[in-house]
Amino acid sequence: MRRTTTKGFARTSSLLRERIRETGETRGFAVTRVLTHWTEIVGEDMASICRPVDVKYGRQGLGATLTVLTTGAQAPMLEMQKDKLRARLNQVYGYNAIERLRITQTASTGFAEGQAVFAHKPKAKPKNVTPEIRTEAARMAQTAQDSDLRDALERLSRNFLTKTNR
Image 1 (cartoon, rainbow, N blue to C red):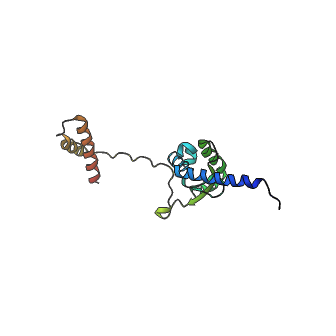
Image 2: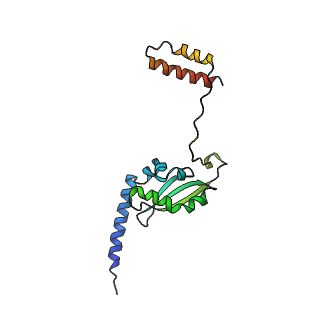
Image 3: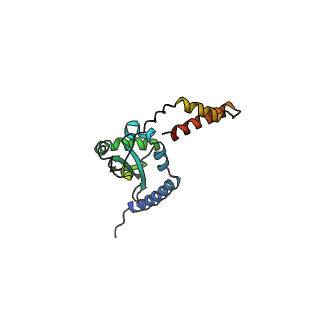
C-alpha cells in the first residue's frame, strides 16, 4: 500500500481551518465591521445599490460567504463588480476573509418585507410654524428658570403643537 505525504498536511490544515473559523465566529470578525462600516468599506456608489445581509462560514476553507441584498435592476451591475466589492472588503482585513459573494434580489415595490431602500431618506423639511403656535410654546416654557431648558421646552412644545394641529 502506497502512502502519500500530503495526507498529514491535509489533516493539519483541516484542524487549523476549524479552529480559525471558530475563533472568527466567536469574535464576529467580519460581521460587525462589515455591517457597521458598510458605506466606508465599499464606497458611496456601491452602498447606494446594495447592503450586507448575512455572513456564513462554510465547512471548506477559511473564508466566509457574504450575502448581499440588492434590487432586481441593480443585480447585473453588482454581479459585474463582484470582484471589486470582494477586494474592497478583504482590504479591510488584510487577508481573504470574504471568499465568496452571494447576491440576492428583491423587488423595489411589493410587500413591505420585500421593499429594499438603500439610499438614505432625505430629511423632512420643517413645517412652517404659525405665530399662534410660537406664542403658545413660549407661554408654556416661560416658567423654566434656565435659558437652555426654556429653549428646549419651547422647541418641544412647538413640535408637539405642530404635530397635533395637523
